[in-house]
Structures are given as C-alpha cells and as structure tokens.
Image 1 (tube, one colour):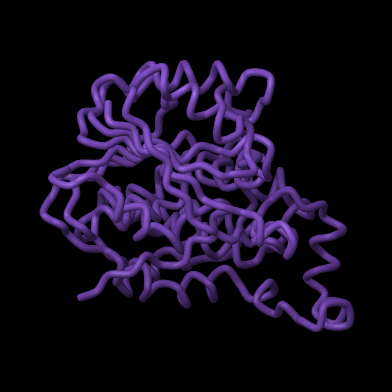
Image 2 (cartoon, rainbow, N blue to C red; image 1 turned 30 degrees about the vertical axis):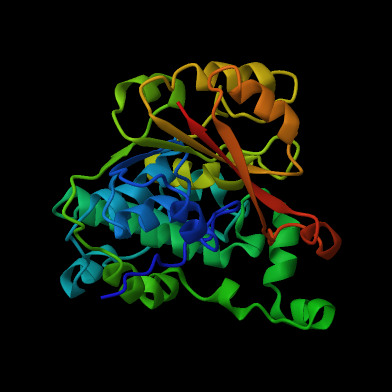
Length: 334
C-alpha cells in the first residue's frame, strides 16, 4: 500500500518537497535524525523509504505527531475508542477557564476539556497520541488561518460565513463544523497512515542542544525556523501545547528567531554534530543569515559542503514573494 502523510497543516512544512529532500540523502545511509521534525513530513517520507527515523521537536504537540505517525507502527483508533473520546457532556476545565472567547466560543472550550479528559482513558500511549494528533487537526480546521495568533474579534469575523462570503467570496463553513466532525472526517486517513517499516523508530521532545550528541544516525536533517521570515511557532501553536498539557506554555529559550544571536546559535548548534557523517540543512533564500553567511559557518566544520536549490512556494507569502522563494539544501559531508 502506498502510504500517505495525512493533512497536518503546519506552517513551513516540507510536504510538497519531502521526496525531493530525501532523494538527496547520500546512498547507503540507513538512519535519520530529524532534529526539528515539526509536522513530520520529512520523517514520514524517510520512514516510507525504510530508514530508521529519530524525530525530535521542542513543541509537545509536534512530538505527539511524531509519536503517533513515526514511532507508532500499528496502533489505530477503532469505533470503541471514538465512542469513548466523545462520550459525555461538555465540562469546564483548563480550556474553558483560560481560552473561552479567546480562540473558541465558550461551549467549544468545554467540549475540548471533555475530549482531553476522555483521551486519557485510552488504553495505550500510541492511541492517546493519535487521538491528540487528530484533535489537533480538528482545532486547526476550526481556526482561521490555521494558527493561534489571531485576535478574537477577527476570529469571530472570519467565522461569520455571510461576512466571509461578502468579503472574500468564501463562506469558510468548515470553521463552524464541530471538533467531532473534523476528527471523524480525518480519522480514516490518519488510521491508514500508520505502518511498520521494520525499524525501531523513536520520537523525542527535547531541546536540540541537549539531544544531538546522544543520537547515533547516519544523517542529521535540520529544518530550523527561518529568521527574518514568518517563523514565530510559539505564537502560532503554543495553544496546542497548552491544550495537551493543561497549562500555560512559555516561549522557548532556543527559538532560532533572534537576528542578534542567530549566527552564534547556528555555530553552537553545528558544533554538536560531530557524531553524524552527513548533515542536511533545509533553508530559505530569504532568511537571515543569507546563503553565503550560512556557507561560511558550515565551512568552519567541513571542507565538503554543497548547495542544492529548488523553487518552492510558501502559502503564507504573497504572490510576488512566492515567485522569489527558493528552498536551499546544504549538504555537509562531515
């Protein structure tokens, strides 16, 4: 069966070019450490190709995606699981008390509190991870622009189907479908995406500086936030981490978004990669530092660095900028 990564909705994801990236993995390599796994598009493609995959992300929800789709080899959700998740009446909990009329309406937050409580009743960690990954998808589908840095007045405005049609010629009715509707609509595609590639794959939830020296793999793949672009993943998705953990999430210490420290951040990061034979770094031609500066940093660690370029449109950029975007792959032979 030709397995397909289900729809994740993650800004900066590489789903359209994951095959192109993996095509450039050096021959005779068998294992991959995806250090900033995000929506897991590259991890999933590598898993399909038979690699042993180690996926890591500092965000808890991204770790859960990797737990459910990369580490998980067989567990899916059945009708009894679904009945359990959606059983009962909406209840007041963390989401209702903290986020009513901030991202969702009051009763919707109570529904999320019920579902979060019920998911903990599932009988193993992979079912829980898959259920949370599907609930993430449902929360994303109900949120305008698929990110959580939109003010409530704008959220309400865009969820007004008549206003949306009058202004944008789109009703966006899916924003007003229930969490349960979106969960069940995506259930089959997520269940079908689960497979065993014969390898013991593993998901991690660590700061990359603390983990990179502890993983043994042929390739380390790095797709960091791109400084100077739309890259504030904490503001985009921290609500999902808060939902999963039932607590407020503080910004990450190492976020690779500060232009004042980004050069030293990268140099510090690469200094921890000595145990990987090959480094593959995804980058964007509009990011800071620029291509030449990034090459100068990498050449401090290896004399064998090459760059491959490909035009790649990002949905979040305007039409004019889309035509100027290129995805860069720095391939380092350590």
